[in-house]
Amino acid sequence: MKIIIYITLLIGFISCNRQSCQVIDEQTCQDFRHHLDIIKGQYRHKATYVDDYRQSLSYISRVTGYWSNAAYSSTVGFREKRDYHEAMRHWEKWYRNNKCRLNRDYVDSVLNRKGQ
Image (tube, rainbow, N blue to C red):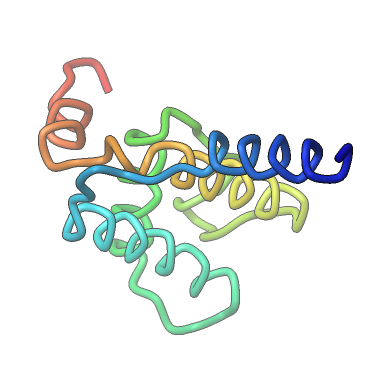
């Protein structure tokens, strides 16, 4: 009997923690992942235009509110491996936690804020 109660509680706990979205804006999520892939590609030494890298870094940073230690002036990329991994962990966690509310209106409102 105790096993049935534990199983029931476990299933209830798992189902309450599972994040399912009513609606996902696939295009906006795809745009976010695309910008993240450009940053990852540059770190992995794939040919990347500096303007694309800078635009992706700005987009991801402004949308998530997390500004990394990445450089894009005379040098491009992260100076330290740990800075790259820390930024990726933060940005990917933000995406997992916010993909349900990530839509074009949200991105536009963030990107059009004055002072940024």
